[in-house]
Picture 1 (cartoon, rainbow, N blue to C red):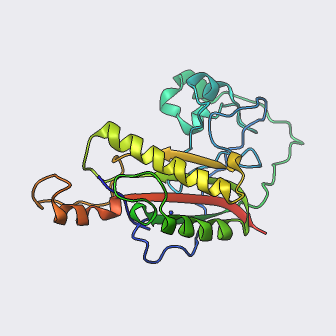
Picture 2 (spheres, rainbow, N blue to C red):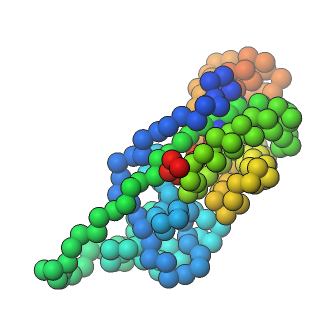
Length: 242
């Protein structure tokens, strides 16, 4: 199994210029800061960080109970009803009649942070089947960190991916180790560790098809080359221009 593409998607060709991406037009989910931990990744404004597809990012503190008791500002529902509604009790997420005082004024949200997405080929960062950064990979991430620090960073999310070759457990572990290695290096470049989240997706999110190319083996050079875009590390930076 291997790694590569350009978002940190892989095929390092046009990558390292940070690519501005407009935030999806989606409702903000701002939690009430009643606890020291949150079930989902949040930015400095206590707003839940979501992917371009609108999905929430779970933290290591996530539990069904925490998701169902952490409330959303300006809402009668907990944050789980917005991020994991299918896991919440139905009655918990049903609307209730609430009288609104006539003098109540709508809250005007502040400016939304912009997102920067970059994808780097895993092969540009690591040797085949390894999770230790190469010197070339360190140089790539050093340049990335310098550009990221030009933002007032809210959160950075590093997600590792692999191709479909090899077992599920092995690929999952490899993707997690590579994402962790990226975080460790970014922290060494004075990026706040509390702003960096990591996640491994293993081989669950391929971007290739690669059919009818022969044996499903790492020795099949045509298949390995075709699967290159699946071997990637994606980094999403959310912040505001300084």
